[in-house]
Image 1 (cartoon, rainbow, N blue to C red):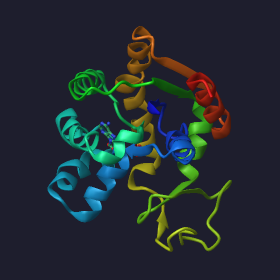
Image 2 (cartoon, protein in one colour; image 1 turned 120 degrees about the vertical axis):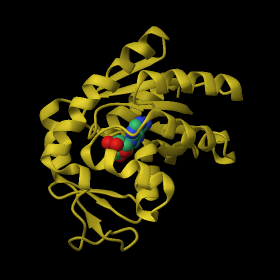
Image 3 (tube, helix red, strand yellow; image 1 turned 30 degrees about the vertical axis):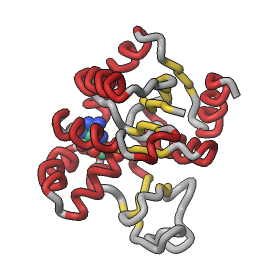
Image 4 (spheres, rainbow, N blue to C red; image 1 turned 180 degrees about the horizontal axis):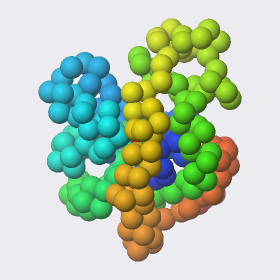
Length: 213
Ligand code: AMP
């Protein structure tokens, strides 16, 4: 399957993507994970992205398109991909359309995961992430077995720098200003599936149904 996952930070894009990868071997491509990896590695890309990310602002479109042009042409994408956190602006969506046309790839559709703002705020303030493998936990609903230690890889599980209250509030404003318009963009392309649900398995079922299986 070749899907775009849209939705505010904390809507569950990453969790839904991980569940979908288990169905048919499609790969999850999270621009947020790629950028966090670059920051941790101290690469040139990481240096350019770090301040934007910490403030909860978007990284410039050119940097993101540079990453995605390369990533979407890697061999593992042939089986299918789940775009998690990309595109996030209209220029990114337009550039993606052009890129896919050039490399001869058809998207299935874009999924909007629609979750109430109060649920999002609660999830983001209680979310914890493994710095090594990116696994996601929640101090209330899915804590690690040992506090601060990833169940899967033993890495450190921390609150992300951009999950302070100020950065969260900015990320939600940025989502409303820059990313929410993509819902209409994909509606106009007849490529939008909206699922209003907080449970990831409900979202996955709706996607499978639309895919015809
Ligand atoms: P995420 O993990 O998807 O919430 O992304 C974390 C941060 O990475 C965002 O707040 C942005 O600073 C940056 N980022 C991730 N994806 C994009 C994108 N497609 N365009 C611009 N910035 C992005």
